[in-house]
Length: 133
Image 1 (tube, rainbow, N blue to C red):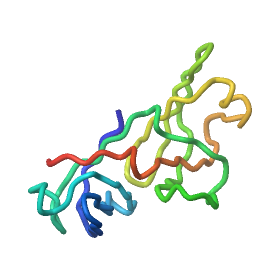
Image 2: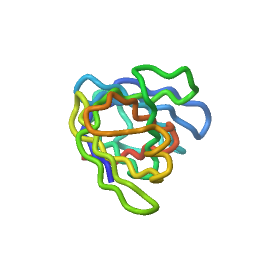
Image 3: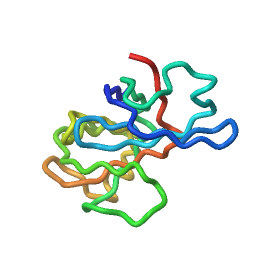
Image 4: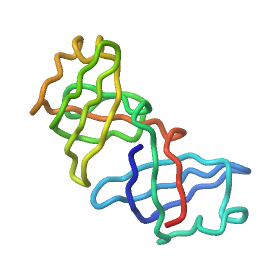
């Protein structure tokens, strides 16, 4: 599980949904949640929160920027690969700390990932959970 402490800097609400922007050091994350500031006490601007997302929810791509609808795009460098027959764990050094992804080993081979490769980690807004610190 990837976990990082950050601060809420923006909240957009429409009916029961909120799009929340959280800054973790210099990285911005967006999370869409089924809640609003009127139904969730810690959903306030400048409030400290923890963002959480599973290693299996991280998509890896080569390069520095991808034109895609996934807003959470994190630049990093591969630091460790733990390879197995079906799944592989990839550790990525980012500006805010280490991030882990679990991808299929066939995807690892297709991308020709190895340590020191520059990559982009992508996480969909609906896969990022927020919790109070």
